[in-house]
Length: 311
Image 1 (cartoon, rainbow, N blue to C red):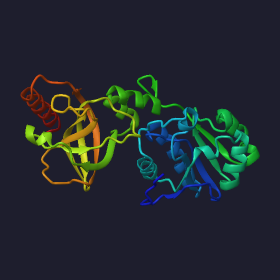
Image 2 (cartoon, rainbow, N blue to C red; image 1 turned 135 degrees about the vertical axis):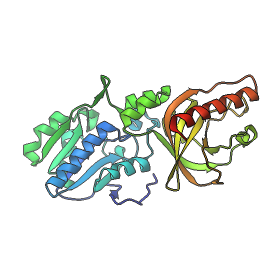
Image 3 (cartoon, rainbow, N blue to C red; image 1 turned 180 degrees about the vertical axis):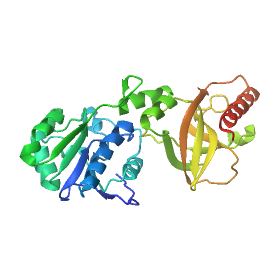
Image 4 (cartoon, helix red, strand yellow; image 1 turned 90 degrees about the vertical axis):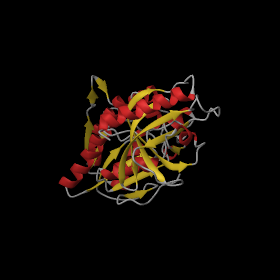
């Protein structure tokens, strides 16, 4: 698993002795608003007590181990680590879940967490489990406070509109194309980061130049459609609209691709990285009866998003 090391936060790919830490436990897919509370509690407690904070997480979802398949995530590993670093964490331990999956819950705390970190505090979400058969939970951690001389903090569930914030719910919203709801729970815009590739250049023939990105296969599939977006390139932010899908009116390739029309932008950036942020669902993808009808609809989509953003 590739990990970029251009971080201020120290990243370790195995357990290593770092004593007197304040540790937050979890996979933290999406680093959504509830995850942010768990991690921020660890960071703040560490700062208040002149200690170092750490997140203990995994290279891939623990669900991969149980389901024996590649479970799609909200964020890539590198993006997840970047957002964790943004919360001012000192250390991230990014380990293989399979190496600890068969350890009994008590033994995991004693022989892994306590042995390596002698934690002064342990923080988890309200529904965090660990150890063989998911037998460990917040109740066990609370019961082990005196034995191992740490404080345990369980962060209460975060709710929005009567629903508990979770990665599962965010994935559901994304798969349905409910971008606004997903972004509200994430506390930021859902985004895709990848290199610009050469497409079929159909957009040019329609009068709307687009940048094409291969949608990462390990990231949760957002519902096909047209979305209002913002694009980050070379430290600058631009508005645009994106189409995610197979372009049924003009293409027979049946290959899913993300293409974005970046407003007021006319540079050749093939091979360069951009970040595309999904901000609002404009409409579903559909097959139009003619290319002219498609061009007219694209023009309407652009006018709508420009007007909404004064762009």
